[in-house]
Length: 279
Image (cartoon, rainbow, N blue to C red; front, side, top):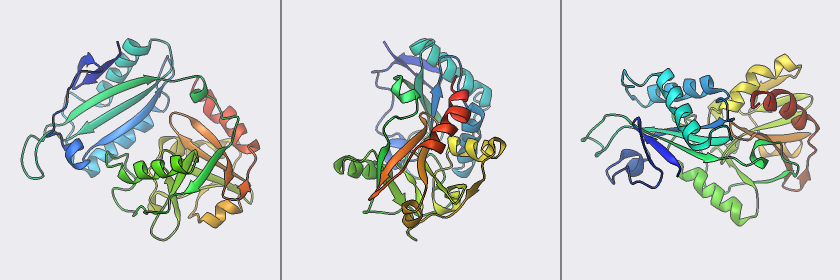
């Protein structure tokens, strides 16, 4: 049976471990990281831990002395080996400030680690281009919380529901200025005029781990990459579009609106910069 790790202790995955007073449940007050397990190691784990600790600082969480970067890393690997051995898996590490109300209760941090198996298809570049649209019902306001991987996921949840209804693979979320922030589960990159562009965190996107990795390493591979404000019109005029996250790496967008896109550049980046860190 699959196990979960709750505050350092292993339980059967179907064991009730959280109460109705949990603040992540009550208020969406929590952070999470979604991490890939290759069967041997956790790619980009230092980037994940950087983002997690930066988010905890923003939310005024006090990491207990016994739970440092090394301990988090160690416990994730322990659970992955227990549940999946050398097979690939997806990991979710969630952390939240205890139980209680807005002004009272226990503020002691709690955490949960969960894992699920990954299929071969989830670990490779997509052969069929994604169908992408824009979520029209709400926008994402940029601010100090917008870049966090937060438990408050209502906007993205509703955008995903809308995408499913439209038979899209994903939906883009805009900010109040009508600029592109990100998608429900990924950051977005476009190729235009020989430059690879992605929205800045200041426009409201989550500070994605794979996004950061590509910003760091695309120049080393000979690409020009920039953080640029993007409008839907920029996507219409793009040469290519691709989405990125830490589980799937790069996924090629084949259609946005009435426009179709090839995958030459995105597949090359996936093969040379992403698949290499997954193996």
